[in-house]
Image (tube, rainbow, N blue to C red; front, top):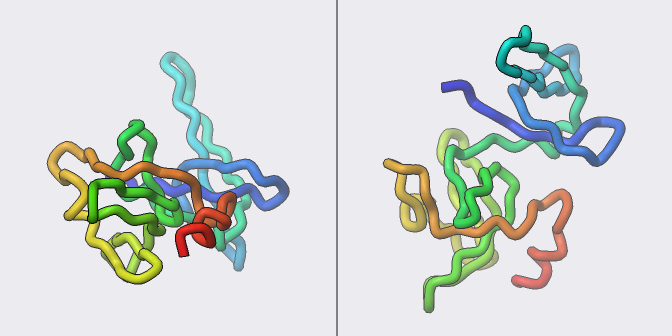
Length: 133
C-alpha cells in the first residue's frame, strides 16, 4: 500500500493528490497519471507544507476520501460532533472542541466505511470550526 497525500500548490489554491516528499527545504507531491495504454507520467508539484495531509484510508458517507485536516461531522443523537482529522505520531483521531474522538467508534476498518461526513477542511473552511465552538 502506498500512502497518499494532498496539498495545495505553491503558486495557486489548487489541491493536488499523490505521493509526498521533501527535498532541499521544499515540499512536493508527485502526481501520477496512469492512463491505460499510455506510459505513466510523474509530475513533481511544489506544495505549501502546512496544507499537506495524509489520506486516512476511509471514505465518508458520500464516498469522499477523508484526509488529515478535513473537518468532519458526525450526527447520531447525543453522540454528535464536528471535529478535525488529526494525526498524533502514528494514529489518526478526531479533534473536537471539547473532546477527542476515536475513529474506531465511527468507522468500520474492515470495509473502510464510516458514519462521518466531510464538510470542509481547515485550509479552505476555517469558519466551520468557529461556528462549532
